[in-house]
Image (cartoon, rainbow, N blue to C red; front, side, top):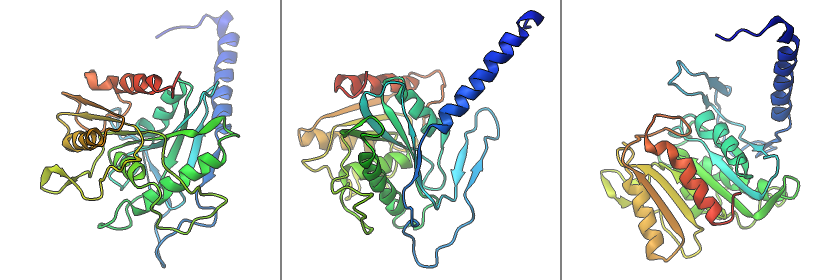
Length: 299
């Protein structure tokens, strides 16, 4: 335990207070926008309990958010925006959102490279067992529209907006990359854009890409078209959610002669996000950062 000399207490206290105010001011300066000002499109009669946060149970646990009926985006701007933005989709099995280690902490990491992080709080839990990503895809498509509409205001270039997601959020990332303009909601010209294709895509341990019972067959909806944007995939070989999904998506990109990068680490499991375990997989942000810089999307 460190002891602050009595004569330095006022200075230390002032510094702490300043830091606290600085953090609070920074949080207050982060714009948060509702994706659906008139209410998100839901089935008639749909009801859900109020949104709630589930705090971590211990140091190894993570913060969760669930019962999201009013999806939003929150903008994390770097001190000197370089024009690139990334919409960040936390994971959670389409049941909850791992809002910190796969969300806000990712946005803060992006800021260190001059990239604007846009945290997407999409609707969970899933509304349908047969089509669990329908509403989250709507939210991601609308989020892309809003970011493009506010690009000049937030120091972003409309043609430099990518998407990144983890696990179920990685699936959402892939679907929003490969099917960006297949809408299942009525568009609003004030909030949507005709082309919601991201400039690039970063799925990190994406889930639900392969057929049930056959890890080596992509689901039919995972189709890489000729206009698919550059992609950087990250997975661990020992992940219970098969890394074959990421590898197969990479191969489809390769077949189409499209820009792609794939990182499969030997150890790491699933759900690590920005947490540290001592495994080389924890260096995935460095590898992704190198890819972003190589493509002139990061400082």
